[in-house]
Image (cartoon, rainbow, N blue to C red; front, side):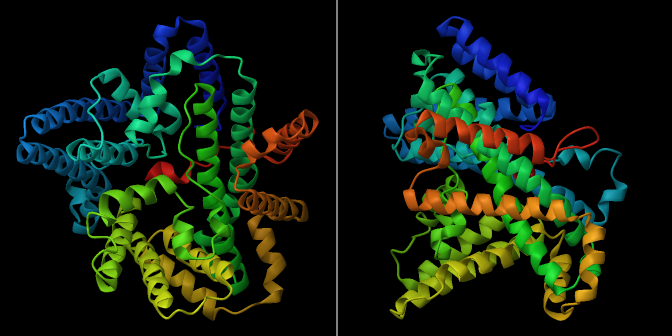
Length: 478
């Protein structure tokens, strides 16, 4: 969606309306635009979004009222019932199609019945926001939002609707209520927003979508490739999913900044991490912090000894895997990361330092991504088996490149794109700044030079044009 001409036209209309119409209309412009955006993608998703927004608004006000009257148990029951309803709703959409297929009932259902359970756009992201919002009100960490308009835009804000980030209520609402102060011509804000979007489009169109064609073929028929190509396929997917999801996040952050709203950074150079725990502090940050605050800590966190900490860690990663998908391959992916984390905890208990931390962490993460990318657990197992048993066959190299449609130019562009992303991540990790912020400290000439380079790279090396359909953002399915 973000890489379509429709979105750029839509964004232009929304920005124009936002700044041209009277200031008091700005909240309505953003909510209306967000509903149009959601309805264009899926009218059914729009109906679910509005229903969840209304139920959460009413439940939040009720839970706070009970708390003010000293009826904490009644408030807790209300919170639990609503959260149970949301979890049930998420499970129905996520697991019902697979359950019907496994039980053989799919063939007995009316035509179109199974497809009606397709996950509504953004559902798992704004349901997590709703659950966190209600828990915070019950624990008196936050006050219930009285304005249905404000709370609705908190859930529906179109830059983050499809794939997050999972925003916290106060951080977003405090900014939303001040959008009347945002001026159109703020050179620093617009320059930063533009850079975020350019860098996001570069990661998505030049790197992720170009890698996608190769990755899809290798994972689609791994028996046609030797061990070296299977390893390359796993490494390519490791970069593809990062550039795809981080690219979306950067575009979303840039869009939000145009309206004066700073969204949460979901990525902090994750592949520069030297430990698994460090990786999860840098990867999909809004989800990992949500799981920490609303699942890991309530389970006891690390307050009840090493054994309990390990159990809690495994449970959190099990939930993380199940949140991403209904297949057993997602469960294995989550448990692998749980096992990595538990191993790290136990290793630290020995007092010994881990050598080669960054390389080991990257390899461990890349291996786990195989289970994430594969169609199912059997496909993942076959892929891993092929990596270790097929062997390296030099005579298959060029036939494989031809089958993948990789000529010399294409291969150079892929390698160069990965190298650029890797180098920028290393630089940003060293400076503790994101690229769009970092270049604001440079002279105008240097800043514009970066703009031109990114624009030229997107137009020349980006994957688009007649007959091409942009790869759906990977995290849209979750």
